[in-house]
Image 1: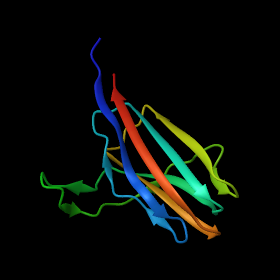
Image 2: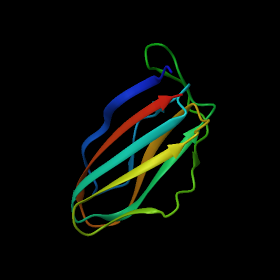
Image 3: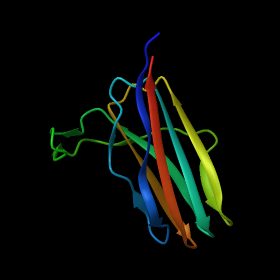
Image 4: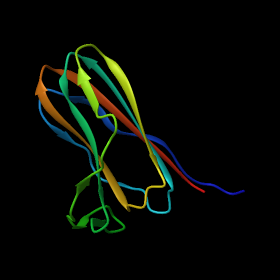
Length: 122
């Protein structure tokens, strides 16, 4: 059996949670299963979401050629930051989208966020 792997890498590094956050887009074409790990410290209060796009596009140099449309995936249960430092993992199984990005919508408080992504195609 052969796997198409996207090794774990950090898409957000020590980003302030004192405001809303939107990560850069991550190409997940040919990946069936995508994992997102969120690590935060401090006392932030807010909600995380994952957005997907089929029409977003970048050229070979990483320049955005089409901003695309972004749609929030339903997460059940919703992933929330509330109070003390914590960790959350989002497992996106059989994802058909070409690109994903992670959003944090702040309500109050402050903290620092790291976010990792990994994926595999079966």
